Length: 467
Ligand SMILES: Cc1cc2nc3c(=O)[nH]c(=O)nc-3n(C[C@H](O)[C@H](O)[C@H](O)COP(=O)(O)OP(=O)(O)OC[C@H]3O[C@@H](n4cnc5c(N)ncnc54)[C@H](O)[C@@H]3O)c2cc1C
Image (tube, rainbow, N blue to C red; front, top):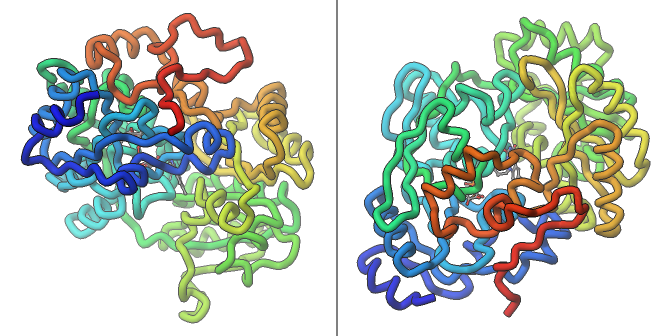
């Protein structure tokens, strides 16, 4: 790799080559997975390049194309699957400085890819009391470009489904990796070529996202004697058409007591919980419904004392993948699995799987709207013992009808959120003919003959050797 030539070509741009900083910026939250930690711990890029404009992105891509240097885009590196890690080294392209909020109008916002989600909401709230429809629990740190290229859904998915759904991304501007990079404006069906593609199909330089009405959401946590009580209540609440919520998260005891350090004082021993974000105008009706369903309100931000509220993280930072983060901080042997409990048997499946691994898998659900129905994902905590046992748990979930989106794999296909179809592959041939964008993440590109039924994990041949 002729990095000196690259530096000469990119003269005047912001480039970082300090080894420690480069390594730091070559990582994401891959270490959530003991499997990825073992496989990817040594991975590092060679340079961090931070373009400030689309014109600079084009310069970097053209130069790297000429010199055959891989480019791995990065928002703020909060992805979980080694998504933003440069498996073959080369340039880590940090889009963090392209964070301009460019235009806000009824139902829409246009930003640079590096804009932080919470900053977007601050601007749209101040402008016209609007907010993003969906955000990950990494709201305060993640970029919008990284969310679209690497995320799937989150807070708000109970109303709007996931990023994969039509209408949840409006338009993307994307730069291709060619001798003369093209700038494409993608809308409608074409968006699927780039959303959740880990940056393998082009660099996003501008996004247009839909907005919804903003509220000062109220955090409420409801306690139940049993986990299934919590799960059934979560489902019933999600099915209440008149109650506006943004988050419905059942979590089994003893997770809240052991791992939610700042909240644990609110929970009785053995109590399973449901963390909820509810719109202020729906609060009274929500509390009446909760009483009727036999839930005990353990915490209500609307009535809690200043002392009780002091230092508490927001409810969404107990949910989605923050549940795992909080557990990991206390017990490093914890990891997780993400599953779907398909409608309409989701509650029966939840009950079955919850009973199958006592003391080893701790249930954590996120209720969502999925293809028009209410169902739930599991982001269940797993006490890790061996990779073989983890694979066995995956197999048992799948054999019982709960697909797993495996967070212990670094490829798009094995992660399971997206299967690479012919359209995407054809688009990759156009947008990145040399396969230099985030190499190693798309099996369909690296090894079209790969046999998914082999039961073996795909190993990318270009995975940089440990130094
Ligand atoms: C505690 C925790 C909680 C989380 N909760 C959620 C959640 O609720 N929902 C959810 O979906 N995810 C969640 N995640 C995963 C992740 O935080 C989000 O998907 C986040 O939006 C990623 O944004 P980022 O800026 O950190 O992206 P990065 O990690 O930097 O990048 C993600 C992927 O996008 C690619 N990429 C980045 N920018 C661009 C660009 N401009 N053009 C093309 N490709 C690009 C990268 O190469 C990488 O493959 C969570 C992670 C953690 C650690």
